[in-house]
Each structure stands twice: as C-alpha cells, then as structure tokens.
Amino acid sequence: MAAQSGNTKAGENDRIPRHIAIIMDGNGRWARKRGLPRTAGHAVGAENFRKIATTCKNMGMDYLTVYAFSTENWKRPTEEVGAIMKLLKKYLDEAIETMARDKIRMKIFGNVEGLSAELQEMVAKTDAISAGYEGFQANICLNYGGRDEIVRAAMRYARDCAEGKAPAELTEDSFSSYLYSAGIPDPELIIRTGGEKRVSNFLLWQCAYSEFYYTDVLWPDFGPEELEKALEAFRIRERRFGAV
Image 1 (tube, rainbow, N blue to C red):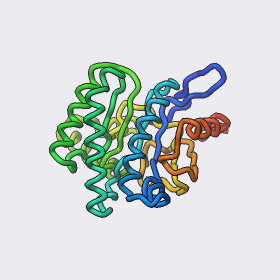
Image 2 (cartoon, helix red, strand yellow):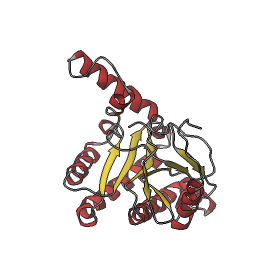
Image 3 (tube, one colour):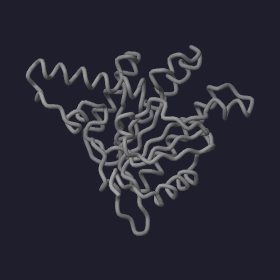
C-alpha cells in the first residue's frame, strides 16, 4: 500500500502509529556478553517479542511487523539456524493455542516454501485462525528479504498479465497488492535495536516514508520503556510526505 499521511490514530495527547516494524537485532551479542551461547539470546529475544507484541496491542496499534529470519540468515552456522527454527516452531505452537483466546492475528511474510513441511503446516493453521476475526495483527518476517519480496511480486504480476488476470498498466497501489503486506498500511515507524544503522533488506518497498529510530539497546533488553522512548521520538517528527 502506498504511503499514507492519515495513517496515525488520534489519541488524547499522543500519536500512536497504526503500524510499527522492528528489526530485532542483538540477540547473539546479548548472550555473548553473559558468557552464554547465541541460541540463549535467541530464546530470550523470542520471549521479548511476545512482551512487545502484547504492549503494542494494549496501546491500540493495529499492526506490528518484526524481522525474525532473513533470506540471508541461512548463511549462519547450521546449529544456530536449527535452534532458531526450533524456537519458531515452539512459538507457533503456542500461538495456535492462544490466538483465538487473545484475539491476535498472525501473518507470516516470506517464502514459506523454503521452510520445513511442519512449519509450513503451522503457518497455514495461523492463517486459518487469523481469517476468523478482526483485531491486532502481528506479522513475522520469516525467510524474508525485501528484494526477494519485490521480485516475487513482479513475477506474480507478470503471470497474471500473461493469463489476462491483470491490467497492462501497473500502478504503485496495484503492485502493492502483490506484496506479502497486501492490504496493510505501510509502517509509520521502523525501529532497529542493537546499534546498527542500516535497513538490511527489510520492507524495502514499504519503508518509503517510514520514520526510522535506531537504538544501541540489544533486542532482549528492549522492553516497554524503550518502546515508549521510540514512540516519543516519533511523536516529535514532522511527516510531510514530500510536501513543504
């Protein structure tokens, strides 16, 4: 969806974004500082995601998108990748049990065909549960890359054109409908923890007019109070969307 100037909720004295996105960086360094294996950092980071998602929902946001595993992360050591996949399975297992109760929708952004058959089945279950009601939605970018998303969207559009299912004239809005984020407003705020200041192939199309907030705080230490600091920084930004 193209960037929108009216996509913040009107609060009493606050501007609460409808949609924030987070690059959850620093799990490995958090563990190393404590003499723990990197996998321990990923476990604590997964629990922190649950806490931040609940905080966002309670604050009145509509969407939270997080970068869980990129297309480039397969280059990491096999043991670490395996541990991350086990954590994802554990989280999805728990989510399937609690999504309906907590009225939290979940969507996976990424090439799920590159995941194990078991994880693909669990993703399908979360999709089915999410379709049953409306409410806060957590988007987990899994086996995701921004460039890969754009290429796959272009290929889908080309196929639809060849089959006569899409108009020959392509617009930004129509192209957005082929992205994983179809129907979801672009994030107003993107947060990156861990001290790095780069996009790292995350939401390349969707971030066109996002505000960015960088912090040295490692992801496992990024609690609700750190989220509030990011929101305070967002509130004082003037968002002009190319206008004066």
